[in-house]
Image 1 (cartoon, rainbow, N blue to C red):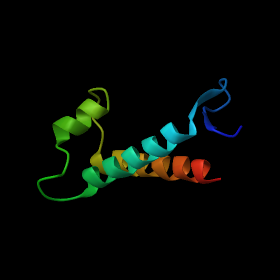
Image 2 (image 1 turned 60 degrees about the vertical axis):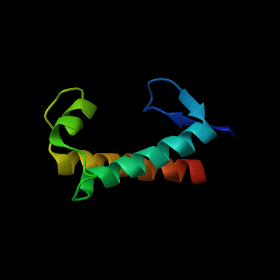
Image 3 (image 1 turned 120 degrees about the vertical axis):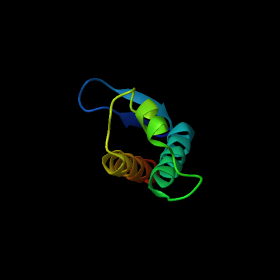
Amino acid sequence: MPGSTTLGGGHGADSIEHTDAVRLASVLRELSGLLAVDGPNRLTDAQVSALCGGEVHHRQEFAGWIERVARELSRRVSA
């Protein structure tokens, strides 16, 4: 459907507006960079934990997941 991006894996159609999907992909790409970068702009372990709902996650795994989601969302909004 033009103007929206469908999200979900067979549990019903959840969608967001195209412009929101583009913005979300951009935010996810930036977040991925803040997880990976060294230096003062790097997200702290406490911030990573907060983003993961308080669960302990390995930074690299979380950064990889964020990067994959951003890439897939970008692919879908570009199609």
